[in-house]
Image 1 (tube, rainbow, N blue to C red):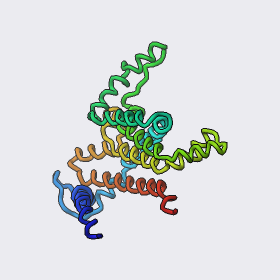
Image 2 (image 1 turned 120 degrees about the horizontal axis):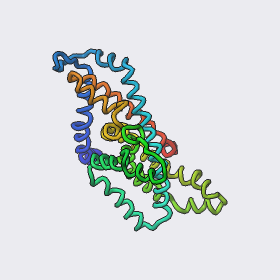
Image 3 (image 1 turned 90 degrees about the horizontal axis):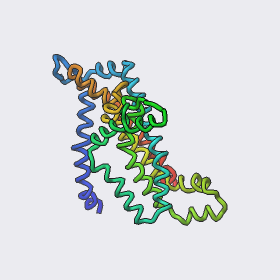
Image 4 (image 1 turned 45 degrees about the vertical axis):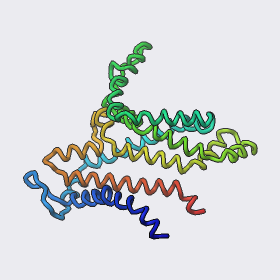
Amino acid sequence: MNRFALVFRLPIIVWQGLFFLGPLFFMIVMSFFLVKNYRMEEAFELKNWARMLTRGYVWDSYWYTLGMAGSATLVATLVAFPAAYALAFRVSAEVRRWAIFLLIIPFFTSYLVRTFSWYVILAGSGVINAGLGTVGFGPYTMLNTPFGTVVGYLTLTLPLVVILQTVALANIDQNLVQAARNLGCSPPRTLISVVVPLAKTGLIIAALFCFILSFGDFVAPYYLGGSKPPTLPILIIDTTKSGQQWPRAAVVAVMMMLTLFAIAATAIWLAYRRRIAS
């Protein structure tokens, strides 16, 4: 039985080995290479790590990227929850299915195209500033700002967060919610004491997906945020253009991977700790 199960697991194991673990291992090894005369040479030295980890601009980009991804995750979670709650508890199953289908439609269009569409909306003479101008406000600078970056992150992640939260909330046993109401819990207390704890796993996983996608995104901070200050993905591109320094870029990439592994492990532990304990 174990051998039979292993046969079915083998394709995914091979896939992960070839297209994830293999490139990851090569990237780690490449971070120890040296570049001489614009050519990489095999070596095992810590010069690239020492150089990148002692540069203030690297850590500035690191904390800025971490903060922007965290901010986008918080905003997406708070904005998505009312919509997900309404889809899970206030509409029929058929309406919920159509809503989820409509939330998937944005992914049919290139993310880059959706990002560029915000130029028309956020520009100094764009839709928002034109509307505010009619009531005597603005114009406000929204492009090439952290606000523009967050908008781009939400364009990428918000539909996914709504879908994941909706699925998590819709799977809650309605009898438990009704029992809390019968015992005298107010709607806010029912939400905090019953609904959120029961949907905790799905809510955390949705936030985790949002953070991962935002943390590694290049398009939004480059085209809507102006790349100043640069996020880590932009720093990687700039580093590779500076003397073909792929090993130094690999150091930044490894930093990103280690950060995501740590945050993902923490999030999964928080999401499943009670279930595992029980």
